[in-house]
Length: 122
Image 1 (cartoon, one colour):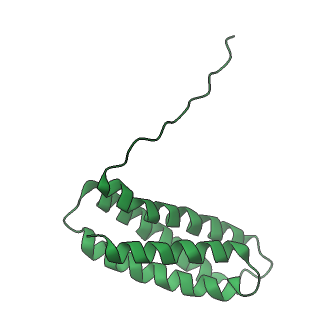
Image 2 (cartoon, rainbow, N blue to C red):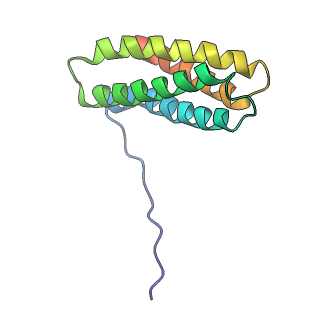
Image 3 (cartoon, rainbow, N blue to C red):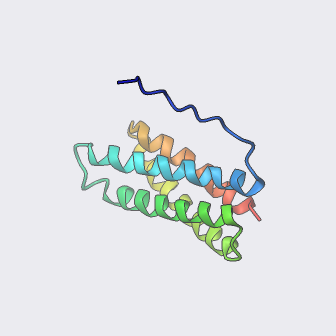
């Protein structure tokens, strides 16, 4: 049986819309990572709001990046909501990051970057 060849993905230049969607895609991934890491912590009840916001943020970021990529006429409204949810998630994650939860620190940073990008994407 022949050996499998590795598939190599070569990045291409992203159109402007795709470039604007990148922070939201990254934020969605970080929020999902954070929610999974929170569920592995000892006191998950204390992290309930964080987990819920992580999931909300991941969803709005995925949807927003899709709207941006296809140039939807509803993009700006969605980006405003995305920025608001990202900011709420960042604030909650920062509380836990202050107690040594690195996954929350990474998530808060991604959320802040995404919120800023959402407010400056037209």
